[in-house]
Length: 366
Image (cartoon, rainbow, N blue to C red; front, side, top):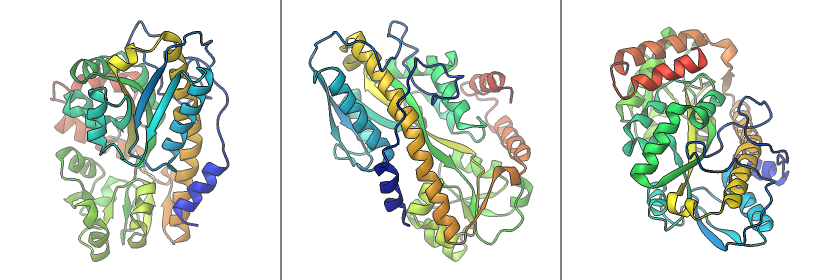
């Protein structure tokens, strides 16, 4: 079964979480990452809030995903319920598939209030607030849940989102994980720890931080353009890569790989942003409702959809003969230690990153 067909079947099943409560991030039954908590005067999110306002408001939604993507499907679900619960007074006009421009162009539209909602990778915002780049470091967090919880509840993170709003007009509405970067290799046997990757050439992106990621895994980083990666793996220019499962399938890289390790060394975290003028124009009941629907759909429901989507990616690789190596078969403590050593050597003296790194360690006891 190909990935597109598998996703269509997943979405056709219509599996949507119908439960909701105000966010308690320690709870097991809610996906962490939602609520505009750094804006002290905003209401608590609540998908079941009583709507009394009659303000007529239309938001333009800039989506860089296809209409069938799990994120897009759940954005459409939000739009439907917003309209229903506000008697058609709060409407979303959704543009899919980068119709309004690339991700960076869409972000600029929201900054200027031409559009009012967009998603973007969190680390992209380091171009506006340098400290946000810390979240690209490998194994800074040991689970996606830890990272999402930190981004949505930590006072240190709050300060970053305040700085981001002050410098860009972007209000951070919530955070979502669409998978994780994982090591995969060709012709490399017996990998259990970073020591087993010594001398193994693994593709990296050009930026130093991403080369440091590969070094932390124990391998030798070799910058290769994404468009050239298939050929580089096929010809032995590199012996591995660290794309997520879905990208590994979409790019057909699994055809020239034999082993996929669930190292999960970097989580793919996106944030949802609106313009602060647009946000402040919403009455409190609309704000509470929208926050609740973000939790319900781009949180709980999305988690169900994306997990099924990623599981199918792994199945496609297994069916093609790729061996999937679970974390239980890896020396994760060795990977954590290697990443910690790299961060200590290269980033601990960074006055911007160091306080955040230490706060994460303290918060989670790493």
